[in-house]
Image (cartoon, rainbow, N blue to C red; front, side):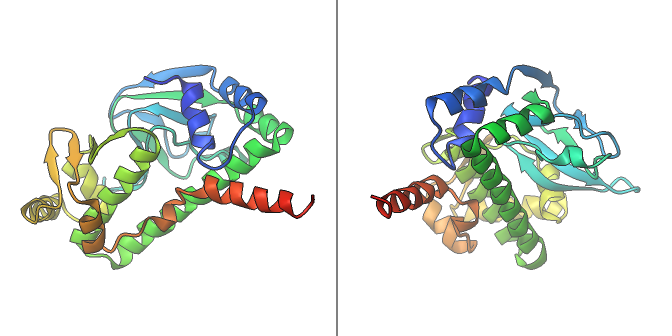
Length: 255
């Protein structure tokens, strides 16, 4: 398993290149780590937000629980993902964060994040772009819940998760880890577990996916993406290349 500092650095460098000094500052943020068992809450709705949390390994989720026990998962936190760096601006959490699997996380005090952002503008830019990318994913999930069919919702989600894991260095060929249950998928996509099961059978029957144990395989990603109307643009996976092109153009304009 990679160290917490390396996981954070890889995440930030998705958006911009860090100097050696900036990389050292980023790595130094992740000194305190802990393990959270599967199906445990990391922080609960109504509690103080506490520290910024970096997922080092394992899967977690943000969720809301209704009074009658129904759960809506509103986002997934994969290795490299950060909780809201500005959550401390609020007195209480408006949602819970729970561990779907065993989770190894780093806890970063808000004041240390703020100091790093003030002292290192490049780190501030990377964290800002990270927040904007997360907001884009949230918008896409809203589209899925409002407009996509069950087949499209689950297939679209699989495309997204594969690419997010691949960007974190956690995909292998056409496969990636998929440790969430059919109940989790139902709470993610707003359909019943029975309908999730039928949709997974449909995806398998068409040869678009295989699911064995905790591993998802997408043998023909382009075909699945086409069939579920998936475009990766909202994931902003090429943001670093864009930033470097913009920086090069700026330098060229001031010889």
